[in-house]
Each structure stands twice: as structure tokens, then as C-alpha cells.
Image (cartoon, rainbow, N blue to C red; front, side, top):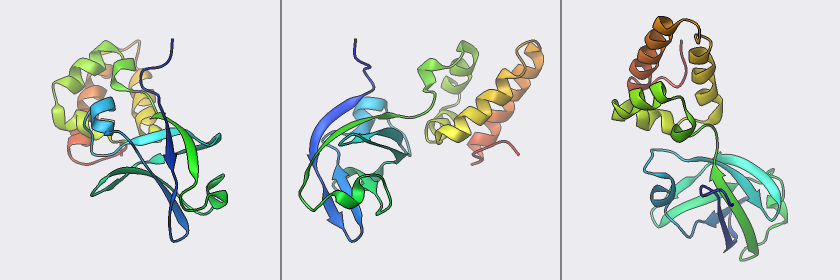
Length: 156
């Protein structure tokens, strides 16, 4: 069975100076839920990439710089085959107590969903280090929610 979070499509590269943009034929909010940022990983013509999607007035694009694998070889209008999926642990993959806590705090949830994989995993390692101390785990979850709501990407 194919992963429902993976989107595969044929697109066209558009040169914008030294960078290459590939417009998405879908709205990521419809597929992965509304977020402030979408950190993704995937392939463009078989070359792996990861990074944030870029919002343009007309929709979302994958933007690859001149040093991105394979991007320098793409000319304006070239057909590309893309596979893309959200990176990092997603809300549905988290422990039940974390999901419940994030569901109860929409601003913290939106902030968590907008984090890059590095920051998500940092929070999860810190919380998971308390598996044998449930009271400390609850405190750390509460601290994470508070800090995410105040704009912190990682714990101080």
C-alpha cells in the first residue's frame, strides 16, 4: 500500500535567476492540513532534496538553489518527475498524550507542525527521556506547549 502522505506528479521547472521553481499542482493544506510552513523531503527527477515549500501568490512551489542536486541541470520549461512528502514526525505518529496536549492548544500545534524535522525531534527526545517519570513528562509537555506558543523553535 502506498503512503497517503506522498504526492507524486509531473511538473515543469521554471528558472528564476539562478534558482529553479517547480509549482505544486495541489494545495498542501488540502493534503497535509493547514500550517504556517511546510517542511518537505522528496525527489526531483530522482535527486533527493529537503527544505521548506515557498508560498507564491499563485500557489506553492518547490524552490531549488543553484547548488541543489540536479537543479543546475534543469532548464526553463523542462519536464520533471516529483515525489514529495512532509518531513519529520507528524502529529499522527506521536504518543497519545502528546497528540491530546497539542490538540488542546491549537497555537502550539500549528507552531509544532511548522517546525523543521530537527526541531521536532529535539522536542520529542527531550520529552521521551522521561518515560519512567510520568510527572516530569507532563511538565515537559506543558513547557513545550508554552514555549511553542511564545515562538520558540527549541527549548532554551
